[in-house]
Length: 393
Image 1 (cartoon, one colour):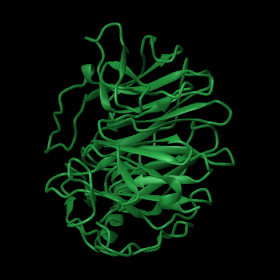
Image 2 (image 1 turned 90 degrees about the vertical axis):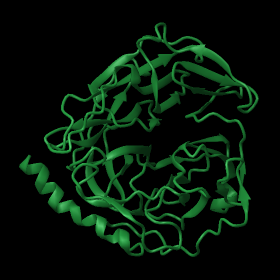
Image 3 (image 1 turned 90 degrees about the horizontal axis):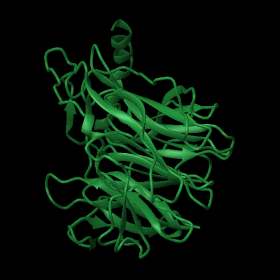
Image 4 (image 1 turned 60 degrees about the vertical axis):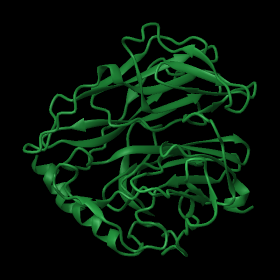
């Protein structure tokens, strides 16, 4: 408990810059160019069928499911829902369903999940099981939810999603979200997960690594940077392999920016925790390497483009121990050509036009080289754009 509070005291001040323009952070990085150049005017422009303003270089994908998606060797695309594997051969217009579980009374996949097809052809899905989810009984007096359960599982298919093996339990602790999964150059599969910690209640991040196509898994160290609250701590991480073989992971925080950590052993241990120059709302990012070799990051900035302040929430030790931005009205994209040391100016690709709505929790896939499909859990954004149109040559 004392250690937890000490870390909180160290980190609590990081939320202060949310009221100011983005500034250089002493992290060894070059900052994102800031402040942003202009404010998005949603009175004119291009809009989706559900009234989200979208960048003129993007186009709406009507009727597409949420994802996440994987490309299949025959040109089809595959995703999942709560109990089914779904395959489309017409760019998401129609889907063929295959059952994921023999007994659907035992398993139901939550909306936060991660999916991959390995180079050897194994499909691996990491998910939280809603059927075992305990009641959300957060206590505002003790700032905790002891005994909370929302388990992490993995399930595999070796025949293209037509049949699936029995799910494997990874842990039973409350898993706030599962957001990302990758395969390294040497065939290790790594996915991100979370564990709630207690006394006081807060979230932590961890990963699982498999060297045998998902048959067995090793758990990483648990990344616990403290916190007090049901939306506090480090959460909802995204990761990618760097050209030198190390792994870089970005984590959602309440401290005004994405935080990063690195692993040199395929995700078994993580260290070098620090803030990044990517000012960010308390919402998850997603980043990946494109076929071009460039890195792409999609996330919610801490404030609307062109603004220097945004209403904060938290500071009550129930939502979180610090005040933070929950700005989720705009979704932005940035690119890096030097392994994440520098990022291009953020470009807003979507902005809500209706009050009390959001566009957040992105998934994306490079459907064909240079063509990126983006979907969101919240806001039901479904768009595509070309890498060259937003990142240049």
